[in-house]
Image (cartoon, rainbow, N blue to C red; front, side, top):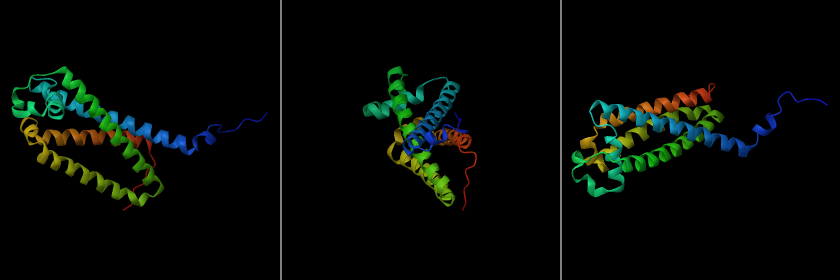
Length: 173
């Protein structure tokens, strides 16, 4: 009986398994990004003496628009925190899945890497601009520099995870 040197090579080359691996990798990166944002705002809120205030405001904005008439007076609601956190993690997991698929495409064609970086910059700017236009009552309570810092920290944490998973990724202009 002969043993194969790399018995899992045939299994790993299965396109369905590769796709599942990409989505799993993306979801993990998304959860890392969501946790980074949550920890950032927990620190910011705790420093201001009102832990869990930001997810309460964002949950109220998402689920109870009428509560935003005076967001400064909102009291912390664990129900709003839980509901918002659930949606937040799902959105980040989906974004991580998309990022993972795009990175797989860049691995196949390194010249697309610059386009992916440009897409990230446009997406980040678009997110802040959309927040400024559509969520101005929220941005009165949660300053946009804090939101930008949270998103950049999440992007850095997700990038670090992806970098570990793709150490030989090459980006060409």
